[in-house]
Amino acid sequence: MRFLFLCLVGIQFSHVQAMTFTEQQKWSYANIYADALIEEFDKQLDQKVALQDTGGMLYEEVYSRLLSARYYIDKVLGHRGGNGKNNPNILMVTDTGLYQKVVKAINKEAIKIHKKRNELKETTTTPVIYPSATRAGNITGNSFPSQVWTLTFDDGPRNGRTQTVVDNLYNRNMRATFFMPTRQALRFESVANYVKNADMEIAHHSYTHPNLTKLNAAELEYEVTTAKKDLEELLNVELKLMRLPYGAGLRNSKVRKKIATNNMVHVFWNVDTLDWKDKNPSSIKARTLKQMQLSPKDSGIILFHDIHAQTVIASEMVMDHLQDNNYTVCTVQQVVDFKNGLEQDCL
Ligand SMILES: [Zn+2]
Image (cartoon, rainbow, N blue to C red; front, side, top):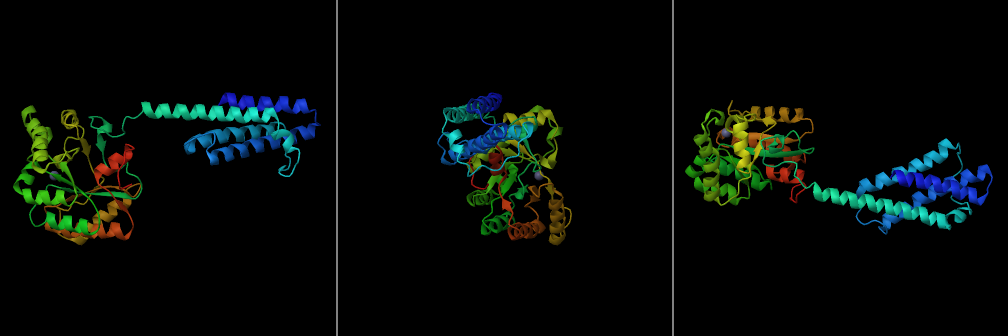
């Protein structure tokens, strides 16, 4: 773009000198010239003649250069002329070969940037969030887009409770993510299938819900790898997300590596309902809303446990709150896909 700027100013000079105008006229026309360039560029962008699918960034970049040129003429050369819109002399400028040359230079430069940007896009297709023991392998809710919430339910399914939670979601056209210990899904297989068949998202939550940081290699293999394989086979799903029992092991490299090598992203939360602590749905709801308000972008991941009776009621209250206040409710995977620039139907 430096080239464009120099070229633009350079041509201004040679052009006005060739016309042999008075000083006042020179800068008046130079001003008009810059205006005309901007106008022409705008027109071309509108019609997408020179640039196809350029995107907002490119436009801003080139446009700002044009404005710099205009500023230079105005400020440095001290001219504050009128708008020149009705000045017939503008034709003397726009009809010249020099004008065409400058427009061509702008287009050439713009296309060059466009191509470069496309190449960049192709070489930087690495997703933002992917299975990894580093930060990239982690989603916590803190980085969610504004006013987007995810409801997550851990430790189920549990007969008689999970179905109601699922019905409540389904009736509100909401989807949620259910982190199931494999042992629990085996115990309540039909309930687990009920969750899946209601188009809810199924995720990994170990086999037997131990603290993974306290296990030896063979035990860890069973709780992560075997648990994944067995739950995938049981429900005929692909598990891409895992939540640690008790959230333990977030910074334990052995545990985090195990999750990553099993091709899963680790999911944390930023709103903990503490729905196991008391049996009062209203106080659970109040606590949840208070934490939601504290989140910087009014967004994130809410942690519930669908094994408790009070959670069935409290989570329905929170669903109503989300619906009444027009929040967007997505599953964890939908937000991961969104952040990775992939197609999804929530955001
Ligand atoms: Zn749990």
